[in-house]
Image (cartoon, rainbow, N blue to C red; front, side, top):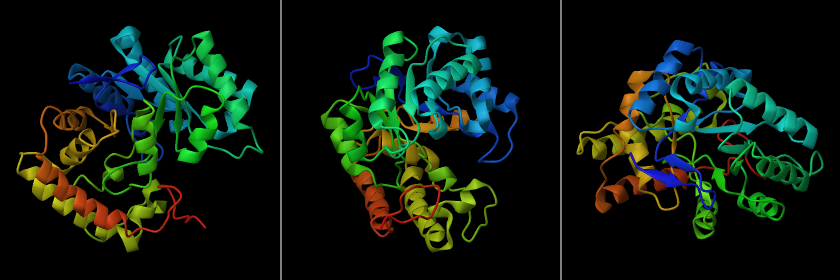
Length: 319
C-alpha cells in the first residue's frame, strides 16, 4: 500500500480510502455494525489507514461506527475524514456540528473536514463558511480543509477566503464531469479523493441488464433506463481488460483511477471484510498504457453522450 500527501496539508492518506457511507445503513440499505467494523478492521490490516465518513451518513451512525474502530485500532494509527452538511453551514452551527462529529468519533481532531455541498451565498456566504473552517483549523480541531461537490468556479471563490487542501468530486469511468477541476487541482497542489469510484456498483460486474433498484440508487441518473444498460456495456469492456490481469471489473475500475493523472486516492466503500479484501487487490499492479487507453475510450464514449446532469444522485439537468 502506498501513502500520499493531500496537497500541501501534510496529511498523509493511504492510496485507497475506505468509504464509510454504507455503514450508516440508509442510502444503500440496512447493514450491521459488526460487518462494518469487520470491513474497517480488515482494511486496516491490509494497509488502509484512512476512513471517510460524514455527519449525514445514517444521521451520525457511520461516525459512531468509525468511532468504535478508532477506539479499537488507536487514533494515532488512522487518518479520519468527516463532513459538515448543508443545514450546519453558518458559523455557530458549524462549530457545533464539528464538536458533535468529534464526540461521535471519540477524537479531539479531524485530519480533514469537508464542506459536504455548496450552498447559495444568500443562505450563508462562502466567506463565512471558509472563515469558520479556517477558525477550526487554527484551533487544531481540523488539520485540513476540503470541498466536496464544488464546481471549479465555486472552488476558486472559496480559495479567496481560506485554504483548500483537498477536493472530493464524483468521478469514475461512468462520471467524468469534473475534468477541469482535476486539472486545476493538479496544477495547484490540491489533493483529489473522488467518490463513487465504482459508480455505486455499476462497475462491479455484479448487475444484469434491466435490473430494478429500490434503494436510493433508484433516483440516480445512471440507474435510469436510458443510461443503465449502456453503463453495463462500459463494464463489459472493463471486465474483459481486467481479466487479462486476473482482476475483477471492480478492481480494474479502482486501478484505472489510481493511474489517472490528478487523482490522489479514490474512496472505495466496503460493507464487510470480504469486500474490503477484494478492494485491496486493486493495489500493487498497473494496466499497460494500451489497456488503460482501451478502457478510457469505452468510458469516454459513454460519458460524452450524457446530458449535463448536475449531480449523480438525481436526474436534474443544468439549464
